[in-house]
Every structure is written in structure tokens, then in C-alpha cells.
Amino acid sequence: MAVFRGEDGVLYAVEDRCPHRGAALSQGVLYDVCKVACPDHGWTIDLRSGAVEAPEHGKVTTFAVRTIGAEVFVDVDPPPSVGTGAIA
Image 1: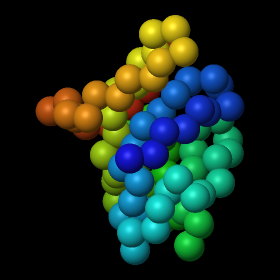
Image 2 (image 1 turned 30 degrees about the horizontal axis):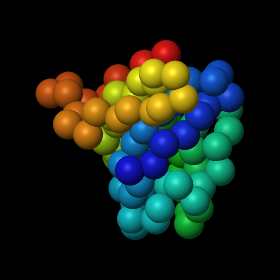
Image 3 (image 1 turned 135 degrees about the vertical axis):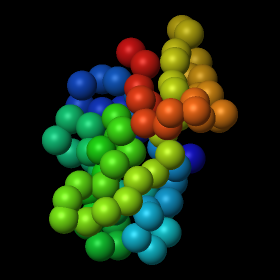
């Protein structure tokens, strides 16, 4: 699992594995508010939905994130409809 703070200030948690070849997304580059580029081949993953941007195909699991004070909590059981990811 990888947790990112988007440029919008929201925390996002996603599976730390690119669907292309399994590279660690936690080593990728965060940009364009809430997207991460895979460090190996540059695939772009939307941290809100987990969807890979076209023309590539795929998806990573997203997890709900919340904060209480300075503590960060991630729901490790993804909801039945995976993809909503962020909680402000």
C-alpha cells in the first residue's frame, strides 16, 4: 500500500503495485493534483479511482483514508465497489 498527499491536500491510498509490471508506485512521481506516474514505464494512475489513464488499461485497488488529529487511518478492507479512495 502507498499513501500519497495530493496537491489538493487530500490523502489517497492505493495498492503499491503498477498493473503493468508490478513496480512500486510509492517510488513514482506525484503530479497533476492526484495522479502518480509509475517509476518504471510512466503509466499514469489516478489516485481517486485507481484507474490507469488511456491508452493503457488497468486499475489498482484504492483504500479509504481518514485522519484524526495527526494520525492517519487506512481502511485495508476495500469497499465492494473499489475506486472511491479519498476521504477529505
